[in-house]
Every structure is written in C-alpha cells, then in structure tokens.
Length: 632
Image 1 (cartoon, rainbow, N blue to C red):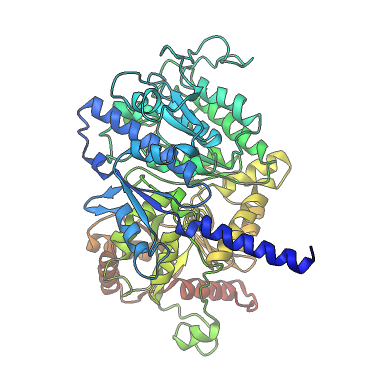
Image 2 (cartoon, rainbow, N blue to C red):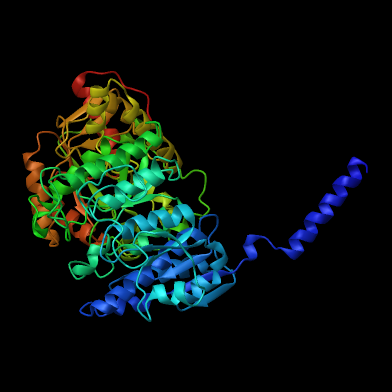
C-alpha cells in the first residue's frame, strides 16, 4: 500500500468513526435538579441525614464524570431569591454562548444520575456515620479511585441500601467502617492495615491512615485540597446559611483527585469537635497533611486549598474554643504559608459553590489585557501640572471593592452586585483573585466581557490566592532557601499575565511578619504597579513599585456613616493618598458614599485604579528625588 493510499484509507476510517461515534460536542449534558433539597426541614434529623447523603453522593459523582469534559450539571445553590446555578446555566445556554444548542437530559434524582453514569464508577467507598472525619476521607478516595462516596447505613430506604444493596448494586471497594457497622477507627492501637500507631484521636486517625495509604504511596497527587466541614455539621445545621455543609464544593477537588480535611489550626487546645483529644492533635495532623503534600510537590509548587475555617461550627470562641473568628482565619493562613499552599476562601455566609468541575472546562481567552495610564494622560486630566508635579492641594482616594478571594462568593454575588444597574457610574477597583478562574472561569470571563470603561480589576488578597508572603519568606529564611517565595511568584505571574493584572489591592499580613526584601522583590516583578500590605510605611517605593499601607474597612451599611468614617481617615492620613476596603457593597452604596464624602471634604477626589497608583508613583518619586522611571 502506497503512502497516499494509506493516508486516504485512514481519512475514510476517521470519517466513519465520526459518523458512528460523534465528538463529545454532541454528547448530552445531564441536568440534575436538586433545588428541592433547600426546603428540607432542618429540625428533622432524618431529613437532614437523607439530604446529606444525596448531596455528598451527587458531588462525588459529578467530580468523577466531569473530570475530562463537562457532562453533569447540578441545580442546587440558592442565595435568597436568586437561584445561582440556574442563573449561570441559563446565561451560558443562550444564543451564541458556550452551551447553546447542547442536547440536555433532565434528571430529578441522584439515583437516576448514578444509574446513567454507572459505567464511570468502579463502585463505592462506604464511610462511618459515627466517625465524622471519614466523610471527608471518603471524598478524597472517591476522586482517586472513581468511587461514589456513600454513608454506610443498611436501613431500608437509605441511599446506601438503594445504591449498594439494590438498584445498580454498586460494590463497596473501600470500607471506612467495618462491614458489620462497627468503627474501623477507634483511636487505639495501630491504624488499620498500617504499622503506624494511632494518634489517640478517633477524628484524626482516618486522616493519618489516608496519609499512609494514599499520599505517601503517591496515589494522591496533593495539588488540590478541600477544607470543608465533615459530618459534624449535621449536629448543628442551622448555625449559618442552609447550604454551608459545602458538599457541593467537593466536586472540583474530587475531579482533581485532591485530599479533604476539617481540622483545627490551633495547637494550644483540643479541637472543639473532639474535646477528649490531647491538645494540638488536630493541629499536628493538619501539619502532617500539609507537609506531605508539600513534599510530594518537591517544595516547588503551590497547593490549591478550597475552603475556610468553619468558625460558626468549630475552632472558635463561639464554638466553645479559645480564639476569635478573625484570629482563626489568620492562624490558618499563616500555617498553610509554611507549606506552599494558598486558600480559595469559601468562607461562611456565601460558602456554597456547585458545578466547578463542570465549569472548569469553560473556554477562556488566552489573555484579558487592561490598559494603564502614562504621565501625559495624567497631565491631560489635570492630575500633574505643566512641570509634571502632583497637585497636593487635593486628596486622592480609592476603594478596594471586595471581598472576592473566594470562588463561592464571586459566583453567588456577581448576579446580585455586579449586575446592578448603577455599576459604571463611578470608577471602581474590583479586587478579584485571578486563581478563581480555576473554579469559576465562566464568571471571570463574564466580568471582563461586561465591564464598563470605569470598571478596573486588581488582585484580591493576597494575589493569586490567600497566603501570607511575609510568613513564607520568614520560613524560607529559616530554612536557608527561597523556594516558597519562588513558587508563589511563579504561580502568581502565570495568573496575573492572563488577566492583565499589575496591582494587588490588599495584602493581609495578619499576625505574621511583614514582607521582606525577597517577597517585595517578587511582587515588584508580577505586581509592578502597586501593592497594599498591612505592615509597611504609609507609602514608599520598592524599586519602582508603589507600596501603600492599608487602612480601615468601611463596614456600615449606611452610606452617610461610611462617608463620615472615610473623611475622618482622610483627615488623619499623613499623605495625600488614601485607601479603604469594603466588603460586598452595592454600586448604589458606593455612589452615595463617594457623593457624601466629596461633599464633606471638597478636596477629596476618587480616582480610577491606574490613575491612583500611577499618580502615587509620581508623588513618591518626587518625594524621594528619584528620576522618572519607565511606565509599566
């Protein structure tokens, strides 16, 4: 056979295969409506248990079948009157959008979905109702071994009975409970199938067993992790928003074969959900998980952690512990900064997110550039005089529009705040972590596509994710390396480049050390037009990067009260540049705050982000007697 004949034959076979097996574009999308689970009576413990089982199984199924392409979509998350999943589905199903024209199969139960995708599953992983942490370990194993996570419950009518004893009869491939229902993990002796001794904590032992069986053996790549509530949530489901079990958040991390945990970051007390443990057992277990993940990455890559300390349920004073909410947030952030990890902070209130495993396949553009301003434009706008000096008879301010350091918050609040009609009337610096494009790329794309000329984007705390660079640098110095800061810079540089970012709108230093030379040098390379840390001089230049110290949050829902606080801070500020932070405020609120602040202080002027930081750079160069630097 000649080469030409062979080529023609192969082409014919390829066409025939397309006819017999059409490309995945023609594959049906499966739409599973679980919104009715929002109506479960939380006073009925049996109903809560059934809801937990269905959502946990659905999310692990979703992570498995969506790993390579989008196939299963779940309609569940609701924020007030807004059905979030239905909103995004409808938007991207409309004419000309990504999902337009896709054939869809609507299902109404988890059992139907499991039956439909049964060939994708190798069976089930059964976990223990009475050992809360086994639910998180089950999610991790589900992703690694393509198993459905199912709570062991042989009672008639349970999901376990319907899926494993009847229906598709999924075989249980991994048991996290003995087959007679007694605990596999007892907090005594040695761990099952391991030579390792128990930690003495029934809660912590399943995590340590997972480290031995799945992490140290290389079966878990440990590039992703979920910090989400375990089954303990079922004991107090009304502590915060109804959907804050965060089971629907699992799917993305299941698809990435990540690990899951729910452990206290405090070493000076027993975990509030395991008071009989020796103080610090949770903390040491968490350290081991993070250390093992870092070691698997050779110390040169970042680990993406979704989630946040569940302060309404555990580990804080309100849950019977010793520490306050924000202190617990900072403690966890400091801890992960030692181990090349950052969090995508699905915090309480708006912590629920569904379908990230589906949306992860959204086709983003290669670049989303943003413009910058030069000295000529600043002069044309009257911000520099004819000699190129800053007009210091005025006071310039900017507002950090946040908090968008969490995929769940961005997904839930974009339809509420971004889509408000008043947006675009004032220049606003929207501070959004670019790493959110990993789980909600469709939202990130939508923001850029619909931005007005007055909407500008900067990175949220503390860059492409939330970790503490000063802490990472201090640990590097203690180790005699620069690996943590090097890994953080490489990680951020990639995300900043795609999204056209040159500003980091806020850096939380927390209780850790201030940023030092190495971390400042790194930010000067990937965030050259400015950063806003907590621990620094009021304003300075690092190389040519403006460094401005953060100030107070504007927290009042009354815009006139917020304006009064803003003006008071301006009057106390020793430099003519001022920054304030706001969390989840509406465009109408910002409009009124700025209007009132400028009435109270006529010299105050709100600037767009490029003008503010470019002008700050000019002012600092004047103050320090530096020659003009090249524009970024």
